[in-house]
Amino acid sequence: MILLPTGSSREKSVVLKDSETMRFSHLQSASAVLRISGPDANTFLNGQFTQELRISPGQFAYGLWLNQKGKVLADSHVLRISAEEHLVFGAEADVAALRQRLEDYLIADEVNVADESGQWSATLAWGQGAAAALASLFGSEVGAGGFVRAGEAFAFAANGQIDRFWIFYPHHGAAEWRARLAAAGTEVHAVTAARDRIVARVPAVPADIGPEDLPNEGGLDATAIAFTKGCYLGQEVMSRLKNLGQVRRRLHVVRGPGEVPLAKTALFQGEKRVGETRSAARDGDRFVAFAMLSLVNLNPQAPLQLGQGGAPVEIVRHG
Image (cartoon, rainbow, N blue to C red; front, top):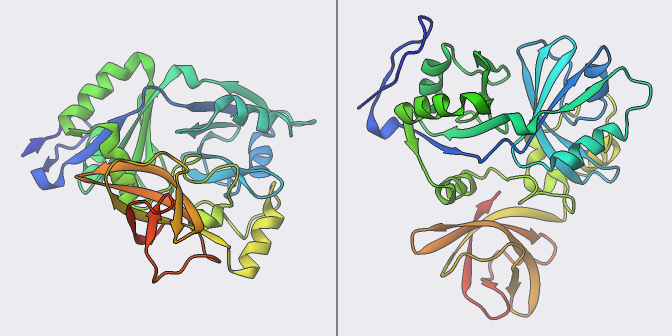
């Protein structure tokens, strides 16, 4: 049994069974954190982001930054701190590229873009006990569309999932927050975190879906795109794909024996190349990976091989 700590009078003491323990993994630092502020900040961001950002302070949205062809440049969680202030958090985004992407479309808008990436640390938490643990640590439940705060720290649901959460906090408070998280759950290695993410079918941007890919090829149209909002960069492509209802490639989860393959290792059926691996992780004596496979060339009944004539690979399910 694990007793979660109580750091303030608002926090509840929660006892979790060992089987319900939260798992977590720390990032070395938050990859991209931008503070976007100014009278035009919300309107400007809403015109660039795939998700609806006409939200109230205290709410957030998970979405994508696309190019003109609808390809994925980055993903982010955008937290609306106040009427004129937003925090843009990207777990694996290239902050220089993301900032440039935003500033390229700033014309006469009263908007300030400040890079705070070097000031923040981040932790990913998941598992059956994560929601209860974070409710104890933050004093309130983490809702699907709202973030919670404890001092300078924030927590919110990750990537549109109901059992995965991001916690980010200033570097100067990292030791305290990591100690509190350690008392509330079990820290796991990044390899285990990657395996759990792949098994849970949560694509990472840009490792699994990136600048060569459409959101729909990884199923991100279900969680990261609002099809009823106004214009944004790449919207025409997204609308056209929704009307067509089909893509030519699709992200799958695959398993195979042996060593973990490098990203973009070719997958074959006989002599025909049908796709490539993306992120992969060890899973016991096997590996599990995301693979982008051609729906045009793929024969669902035929076996896959890792490389031409290589080890057999099993399709587990669509990503």
